[in-house]
Length: 299
Image (cartoon, rainbow, N blue to C red; front, side, top):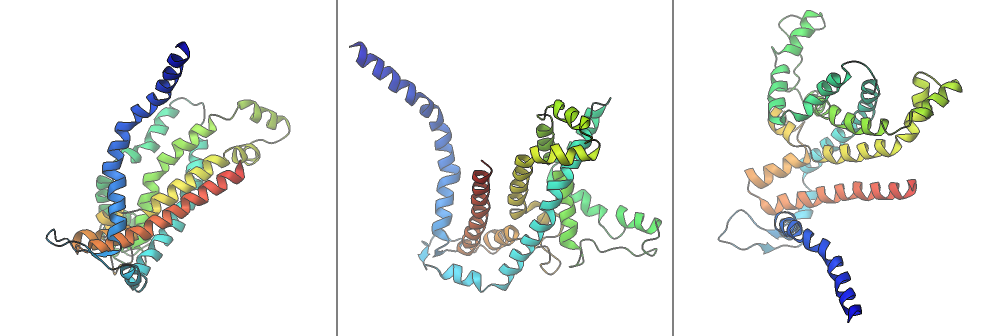
């Protein structure tokens, strides 16, 4: 009798954590899993935003249309340019910033707060502010005129030229992400024992050399984490483009997510938008699998 009681008690203990997880799983199913499965199904159908008609199965027709769509390849190229332009800077620059603020100086917490401030600013507010800074008579062009780098009355078309638009938007993404990744690196730096730096100083490794010998090898997991997070964020960039350029001029700053938004919510071509979303999902899945594989290799 006591054995049966103990067995039922153990089973109850094993089931208890799953019971606590059920409400969260239910909400995730309603808000994430079911919409994702529905979007996957719609990517193989012909469905415009008309509630009176059921989706019509068309198989791979949307994907064939996608691969023949020049604008899709243009947006995919822009997204990859964004990825290659933003990720290396967001991997390297915040680490240097974290090293600078990881000092025992009076008032250093104020510097940390100042560098982190852009993270808590709404992207809408930041985008509008930067759009004014980039304006023809904005602060940036006025500074360039004062320094004599451009002629008076002229300015660089930061957001209105196909040559500069996407790079101008990249600068805002970098400015906004510096503080966030700095905090991740700061947590890693503070976990490194001070004795290692003291021992390195005795061996003649001091100044910036100690960071090359000690900091970089021990920060490799954090470097890789930041690289993966920033890469996934760059693949999904939308707000900056929507607020600052609307994908222009001449689609020069239009990214794959913005193109998905246009097809789905402006043209109401839901099936085609879901097909674009499927490709985006596969790209992000590839980055995640690469992360897991490299993590296994490090282990």
